[in-house]
Length: 416
Image 1 (cartoon, rainbow, N blue to C red):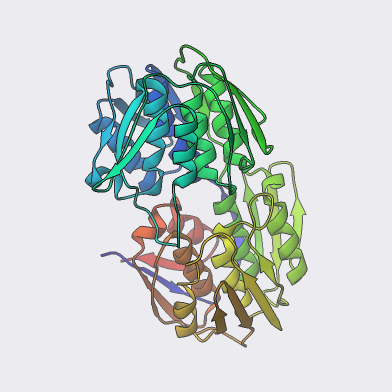
Image 2: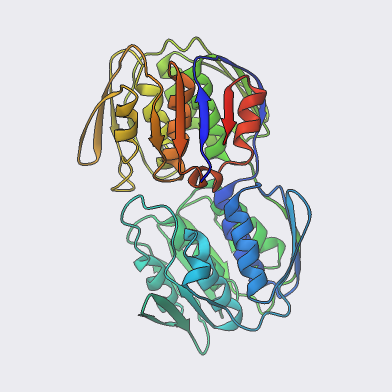
């Protein structure tokens, strides 16, 4: 198993270019099933999740070509059905988007219950509710989710909780349904808009993405197109937090600053200087920060995916910070690892109380999930001495060329 070894204490300087959005890419790749044609997807991040999905589509009969590092050319015309067993689906959560895409095109699909990071209760009941409202029968037996319909008919669907996954899956299934589908209490994340734009590029009629009401007028056929994935706001936020925590002067380039307003606001509260450009943010930090409290919320609130890296920053900030996690119930598994490095944190339920300490000290730590791994990288950059991070396959799921990007900023980091 590989591990990252980071010697902390170096301030970060330079420019980091942000890759395409993981959360967008892992939905757009399964959505190519709907086209039954050739789609060219550009600005894809070079991460393991993208490779796994590309291999999964290939195994299902798609022609997938990777002629350039950040681009896939996917032809799904020869696909006639979609059955993804446990071995295919276990690696990542996004495998469930094949349900909506295949249901939309073939009116049936079978996909094993998805894998991915264990960060708490992540039910798919709202996905099922949406599929059934469109006219599909849904059965779950022996860990296999089966969906099938004679035909799909547009419906009004109210999501009981705001769910990004359910919003996307229902969009995928509804674009070729008869009539109009209205999703109320829909998720508003930027990648919802990106995926809607992609579907419209294929010939769909999706309106209202980015608001809490999305209207989808079904069409008879979709076709191939070319699409460029938006920048990854979570990767950008992670480097913003890393630069703030370690100190230095870093330009975060190739981003959409509006997507990061909640993170910008909190970093400014800690005493960090944030200078906004058209497609960039400059982070200037002494590393001497004051504590703040954060509460994770659905977009445009503070992202749950950045709660763990932000927790690391708060470990040495002056004062006491309170972190409230409202999205996932097991997203504090990184706390014990931070304590190994000298952090003073108490957790009660979904609340972590972080008392700032003078310094963190390098230690051997283990990443329990993707964003927990990112939090340990941030902590290691701050810490005195050397930190070894194991289970870095989680980090590779969501951060493209992490070591190289940090090396370019002056970090002392290597992979063994």
